[in-house]
Amino acid sequence: MFGKSAKSSGGSMPASSSSNHSHGDQKIRSATIDTMIGKGTTIDGDLRFSGGLHVEGVIKGNLAADGEDATLILSEHGHIQGEVRVPSMVLNGMIDGDVFACGKVELFEKARICGDVYYNLLEMAVGAEVNGKLVRQKPETGKFATPPTALIAQASTDDE
Image (cartoon, one colour):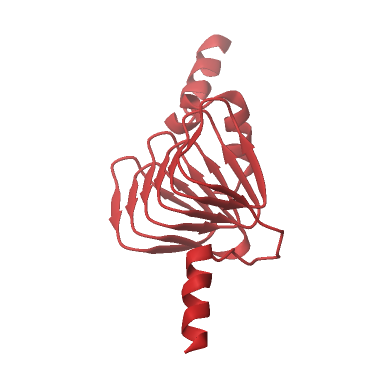
């Protein structure tokens, strides 16, 4: 009798939480999720969000967060093809594009980034991959770093 209810309550846990390791579950449970993009969903175009965003599907476009407390959680099957600008993120999926985070970036063992990562704090597990530069930025409240190429382009237009 008691064993049945314990099993059924354990089975009601979301599939994404059960596929992650226990330290990943704690991070996901502690973050407030306001929006979720499911595993079978693909979004073509840029996306802006506030609060917590959990991505298990695919986003083909740039992703930007509004507010200093916004958090991106990208699950193992999640994939973003574009630039990502968020205060903090927990990543166990794949990003094809540059990442800008003024807060903390947590890369779990199945995380893959093909692009440069501009970060303030970085936590990286064994097995995570970054195919690009890791650039530490000084903490600036709510502001994202500007990539060096944009600074060069801006300087050349200012000179004209």
